[in-house]
Image 1 (cartoon, rainbow, N blue to C red):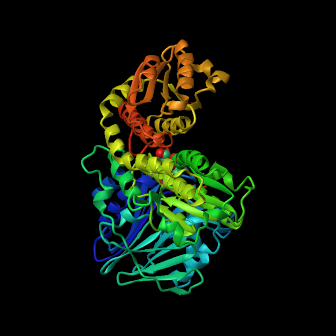
Image 2 (cartoon, helix red, strand yellow):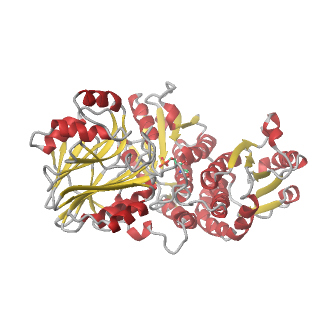
Length: 609
Ligand code: M6R
């Protein structure tokens, strides 16, 4: 994890670096630092805590210079502290390095360097990089960096600034994202596009095994073997305003409210209303033939995994092809049964989640065809896949995934209907009905948001509790799993999700007077059974909040409070159930005074395994 930035050009680098770091704070926020080449040489300022801490240190002692690098950290090796913050340097403070990723062989490299007289000051894996570069420096910084990274195993995106050659910044990528921004008389490095979008829309996306040498006047891309790469910069079409708060108190709230728009954009151009069919030219163009598919694996992490669970139900129900949804970090360690007749669908908002990328690689090795469903153009997942279905949620900044999750659901529904149509496994009238309901979702998402006031009140009721349970059956259980994760990560209240019929096999023992239970009951065919389970928890004193379809009268009789969502097709209901449950988590976090957009211990983009 972590975010890195770099700048060389006509401006004072300090403010460019700080602005960039603030845009990357979602990648980690336990410490931050910058290195700037000033008239007096290389100077470093770093601090434990948020970027605001670093900023106030820099206000007291500004660093003036036109080249610099910066870092915002999510600790992996060594606790958050001033000394473990990046940049890290060699003994003489001539070479500074910022790093995102993990150096797996850092301990053996450290031993080797210590034997040669190096003194280490931090507990980080990164520090070996600066010492290695110093070791190999013989008058050519590019060569020294190349020799140093050849010794590293693991994942790294690094930026290097050295007093030896202060008119140069070097960036290297291996398995951690990195982009280069091209401006007029200035160049930029960033872990992600928002870090530099204020200054330029033209970017190069580095691939694994590539490096960039930046000066004020140019950016040279080359392989780690030293072969020059001719590549056109990529033009970013979206706006920074899309990544700003737009008057909302938090990004999370803004992103929850953006869901009607995100649904619409993800559906746009993908339904041919004349033919009543889904069109996915991205898949057609890749030569993908659904008739060759014998089984499907959906791989993803966290919230995206919960989207995959819904995708599994939708694809299996509509195509009758066996589908497995799997937590990506487990996939490659269980010898998955995948071959050329397997379709692997990787679901990832960022497209940079290391576990998901590793699962994609495993799938490829086994000969499977790989599709990515991702929100980020140019991301590693998008580039690794045979074909990509982009969710059009727009940049998601809050650590908690909201609009990206529901947009993933939309993309998975489209994929399921597309496959069923091509395979002829769906009755045309059922398909027409489902498409009509799918097209109604943006409007219904807007209606669901109107109930925010009630969720705020219910959140106040649960904010003081220690434990909470979510229950549901079938797709309602998938929705409950996501609701539980959202509540945990936002409010730090312990919660668990159960298939409603499973509580009685043990966990019912945890229900006592006042224990809140949120029951999702949007599947008409399962309603009676779920109501039976609600009665079981009520009989043990639970306080039950029901999530019911508009017009329901039965659940209202069984639950203490009911939140209504518009009626939809049973398969589509998780997309609507998500909205009140996201609001519940948001308001519970707010009531407990938590940092809503940056919950403790987490980061937006998990680029370590
Ligand atoms: O970028 P990805 O979709 O691959 O991220 C996967 C998870 O890390 C992510 O969904 C995480 O669970 C969210 N913070 C949950 O809100």
